[in-house]
Length: 327
Image (cartoon, rainbow, N blue to C red; front, side):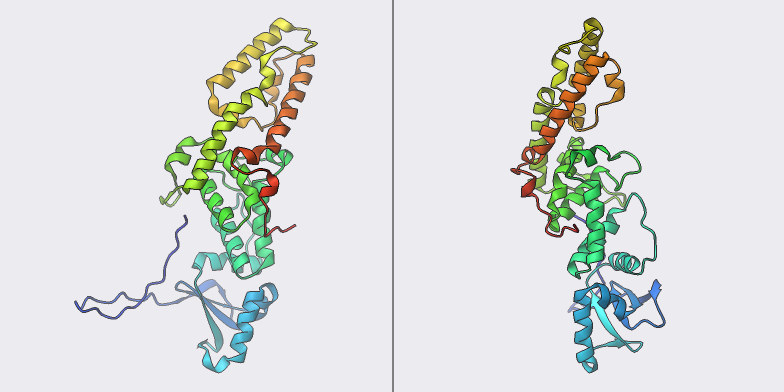
């Protein structure tokens, strides 16, 4: 889904004598060009002079590359007396990776998608466990597998990540690509509130389009429909009658009627069935009904959460392992 810049290539002049595309001359990174650096990396048209010991310490892949370069030093390109390693990653991704390794910048909140995507992809690609684990920690905190952690999320403001639909769609693609599958049910659930983006796609901040693949789209739509069907009879089943020991039946029945109308009037509200019971709603009822309805809601919530993966086509949470788990 995401797009990346490609390095311009110099091609031979063709038979029509059209001019060749000019290569972009490489530039030095303003943040990662150390005078005592011992290896030069290049991503797109940017070069980074960094310390081979730093790369080897954190990455088994870079360690192997550097050992290979040391053995065949005479046959490899050198830049400013340093071994040269061209990378096929974007300049932005490599900058994020080096910033994390050198602990150059504090992590922003919410964490930008480009940051944790780079840490995860490059952490896996180059076997940099600290980067991979940091990205997975962000994702598992933002898209948890437990109801308690889910209810503590703030998906509207100051979240762990940006929960905008366009970002969630990129996250779904990322965790599918990298097999961090345990994050999918929560991502599907949050996105299910935005049917337009599910159906027609969304627009990123850079005005590029992002769409779900057909498998994810169908799974979310089917899951959404099942949740809308089940929520009134499970998590919201308490709206069907008065409390067994209610002492204010007339007032509580009126409050139940209002609550039922709210649910049926706003279908999307039924998709919030996993949120904590709102105090403003409970306050309409007597103390006896508050306790009874609250317990019913919590018990049914937990049952639905335990079954959440089944709504989207899996048999259980165990079907969704995280093969790169940081735990």
